[in-house]
Length: 100
Length: 170
Image (cartoon, rainbow over all chains, first blue to last red; front, side, top):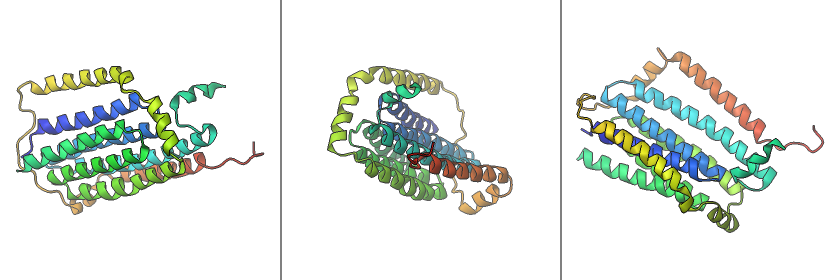
């Protein structure tokens, strides 16, 4: 029997690593990778809750998180390709010139 | 024993995630991210969710990571961009983010240390793919349709955004 507190702590630590990546990195690709880590942290929590309550719903929510992650990655990578074509760099600070 | 396995997998996942967000080379970061996905898949297995564990490897470590690696190779992330990224990312400038994350972490650690039995301590039984399928296509049929719509929207959106625009089109 795995201690529920340690599962929540693990998921929280993974989520905080993802937040750190989103806040610190200025490369758009690394921001997308960090968002993936955050989605995985939430998925761990869903699966753990579903198995502690002996219920199917946790794994169903995992399926929908997977769908969401696939869509998000497809659109995000499209945006990355388009940004690289326009500015030959993935620095998000350069996006502040969008209003020109 | 299952506790030891869980702690080992969790440690591996956390270390790999930390290494993922601190690498300068994008391909190294993606390989560390795959390690994270595999450790998380092991954790799913320990929780009695073999279907989710298989999906984690097939979809995340397989399909999504291949997409990432293809785009990374398209973008010529070679020696020059590694040096450029080393200039962009300095750990000393990330102190604020570390402090913010630590405050959040300490808050929830304090909340969890309050002695209250808030989850029942029953044994974990595996949930089979058959149960998931029956529930998915009976009471969650609307969510399946919404997911299909979401995937279609993402397909059209990704195609439109990543398309190369013609020169005299506008």
